Image (tube, rainbow, N blue to C red):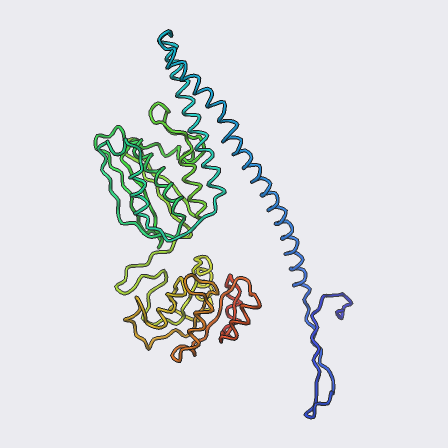
Length: 430
């Protein structure tokens, strides 16, 4: 109870005091007001309960979506197949006894049935993409573009199209979905350049604000930018069906894939002057300014004061922000896996020619980086005479007791729980 009579939650630590002979001479009690912490914990518990409820609701919605997809795949396709099948029988077996106008009507029925089948396929693919688990891997984008070109319909191979594929970066992405992006964009480019005697379709990349931007450009019919907001909507079309066939789902699929990768896509165009689609991934690795020594997504320096080992770009950005705000170091090297960290520390691989006498004054080490685990990196640092004096702070998302115990056993100096905040970082450094 406080002096004013109000009650509060407290954390109490009582310690026995003994004299030099070991005799008990008293106790020391320390009370710490944890009311705000308790209130925050209750709020977190409430938010977690709400989140659990939302997850359950989302699970129910996904089940309904799967049921709808099954219905589309089977129940709706059945009458469509019947319509298409019986119309074909009429045309193939009875067209000799039918008027020319009747045959024309049958052709329109068959065309509509085919188009409806394509719509169902595209809708199913769009729904499926929203549920697919992303399988991220390092992928050569140029390879995906060339594969997409090779698999385009026969029209693309038979026409006089000039293909330009510039050097493209390697990205951490789901390669199968990214290939689908290029298949859709390049198919559109082929379709909208039909009226060009010399069609040119280009895939390339540019760097803007340190981020790679991939683009697909054509010299086709283009569109009026005042309608750009309709471009990525389902069933939204900027050209008449008789001019350019399609279902109006392809660009919606492209946008969903890009957003699932945390990125954005947009287009720039003018009527009769072609169209360029740009895509940028928010999680893409920033590209460096050109340097004669090494590529890095942080400033290149001869002297590295802090080595940051973190594969998650969002966590790395927060850590770099905390470092900058604390003003404890100007020279930071960011590497994205444990193997690269060890190569730098022990002058191996691409770092073989660097000055071995230059060592970081601090290592911020993610507990679970790719290739070599954080604890294995820590073990090698602390077992080598030339590096064991370097302080190491582990960055962890969970602070599992077993990981902390193993870390301290291997010689870690401290832990910081991610995401890294300025206040916590300063407190650890004191």
